[in-house]
Image: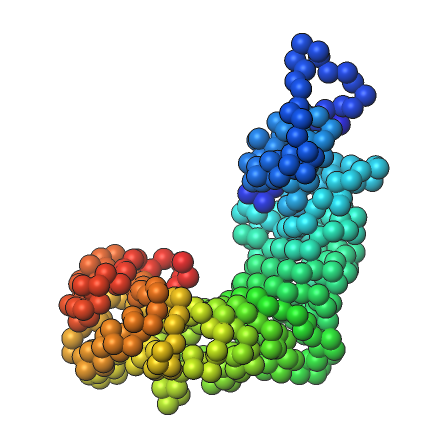
Length: 445
C-alpha cells in the first residue's frame, strides 16, 4: 500500500495517511456508493475542506477520485525542515517514483519551524536531500525561506543554494524570515515576482568591492511588498531602503506596501533612510491602495522639518493607511517642556484632501516607560489640535478609525499613562477609538 510520508502542512500538522490501493478490492461489507453528482460539483465539495486535514485524509481513503482531489489539497503546502532528514528522504523517494505529487505542491517552506539548540546547526545545514527535491517541485509559486531560527544562507551546501536561486525564477511570492547573508543577486532571479515579504534579513554583497551593487534585471511586477528589519551590513547604508530605491525594485505597480523601519537601535533613522522610504512611496503613488508605515519601533520619531512620510492627496487610489512610531523612549534623554506631542501624526492626517473617502485609518503609538509621560513634558496645545483634526476631518471621511497605544512601563502598569491619554483626548475616548495594550513584540497587530 502507498503511504504519505510524514511531512508537515502549512499549519504544522504531520501529513500521514495510508491511501487506498486501486489494485485491492474493497471490503464489500463496507462499500459505499458515491452520490451521482457531476465531477465538477464533487471537486467543489472537497475543495471546501481545504485546511481541514483530518477530513481530507478520510476523503483520500474513499475512492480514486477523492484521493486525487484530497491529495491536491494536502500537498498544496509542504514544509521541508533541516532537521527532519527521515521525512525529507521518504518524500524524495516518492518523488523519484512515477507520481503526480510533485505537481500538487504550490507553496514550499524551507528552514526550521521549531527552535533548535546551537549544537544542531551543523547537522541542520548538511541536509542534501532538499536540494534534490526543489527542482522536482515544478509548480511551486510561493517560497518561504527561514523560520523561527536564524541561519546563514551561505552556510547551506552550494547545491542547495543553487536550487533555491533557480526556483526563484518561477516564483510569484517570496518570503524571507530570519536569514543572514542572503546574496543580493537573488533580485536578478525574480522576473515573475508579485509579492515579497522580508523580515529580519541581512543581505550580503558578493559582487566584489563595489559598494553600489547593481541589479541587472530588478523585479518589475511586484504588487505587494512588506519590509521589516532588513539590512545590508557591508554597504554604506545598513537598511535596504536606499538599495531598493537605487535599483528601482518595485516601481509603479505596488498596490500594497507595509514598511516597519526597525533596526533594533535606540537611534533615529538616518535622513537617507527616511528619504528612501519616501521615494518608494512616491514612486508608487498612483497605484497604492494600502499603505502602512511604522516610522520607528525603538527610537522616538524624528522627521526633518516635521514633514510627513507621504501625502494622501497625491495617492488617488489609496483606500487604507496606517502610520505609527514611538512617542517617547526611556533610553533616550527627553528635552524640556513641550517635547512630546503628536505633531508627526497630525502632519500625515493634514494631507487627507477634503471630500476624500477612506475605508480605514489607523494610528499606532508606542510609549516606552509610561511614567515619563507627564503633563509638564506634554504639548497640550498640540494634543488638542490633534484631537480636533481627527474629529473635524478624519472621522467624517473614514469608515473605520482608531488609535492604538502600545505601552511599556518598568513596573508593568500601563494604567496611569492610559488614563492620562484618555483625559487629554476626552472626545476620542468618548467615541471609543482609543485602544491600549502592553508593549510586548512590536507595533504590528
